[in-house]
Each structure stands twice: as structure tokens, then as C-alpha cells.
Image (cartoon, rainbow, N blue to C red; front, top):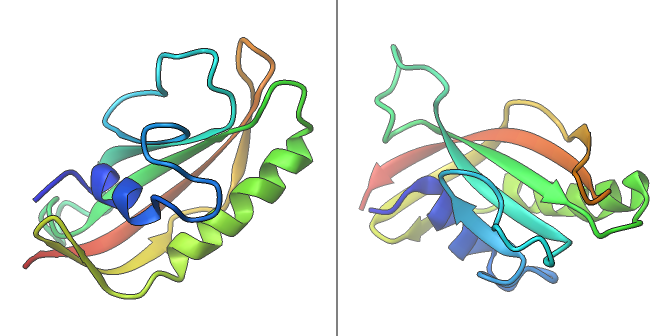
Length: 134
């Protein structure tokens, strides 16, 4: 059983232009330290949506960070990120590394965070899922 962020990164590997380890990262903290990599999706584990209702391993929350290329317009980054988010939310039930994921649901939509120190637009979204051990 892996961290949900790592499992989701593996699930998304090869979707569109996402390549695990190149522009797709499943992390527990932050973006890849390589400032030369522009457009990328970083996936972070953020805990659980409801500690009282479900144990953390059954109902994890995940934060997605979509970072665009230098000099790319914010709308273009949104237009890249939105279909990826919609794809995640439409994923069928799937097994990954000993975990079964029944569904991915939004906690919010895509939100702009502004630009990073290199002028790249960043959008974020939060999702949750139902996970079981398989």
C-alpha cells in the first residue's frame, strides 16, 4: 500500500503529456526541486476529509498543483489543468499497489495561486477518495 499521491501519479502516468518523474510527481512535500522543469503536476497527500467518519487510510485527501511554463498565460495553464482534473474525477474504480480506489471527488475546483518566483502560473485543486486494502 503506497501513499495516495504516489498511487494517483502512477495512475496518471501516460495520460496526455504526463510522464512520471518528468512532469508528473507524487510527493508528500512540494514540487520537484529542479527549477528548469516548467510545466508539471505535483500531487501531495494532505490528510483526510473527516477523521471522525473514516480512518485516514480509507478517506484520504489529495492536493494537486498544476504549474505552467514560463511566459505562459494563466488561462493556458487552466486549459491544460482542467481536463486533467476532470479525467481524475471520472476515473473508474481501480487498484494500485495494494489499494483499491472507488472514486475521486472534488473538495473544490481549480483555484489560481498566482505565479512562482520564475513567473509560472500555478493552479491548485483538492480532491478526496475512498480507498480500501486489496
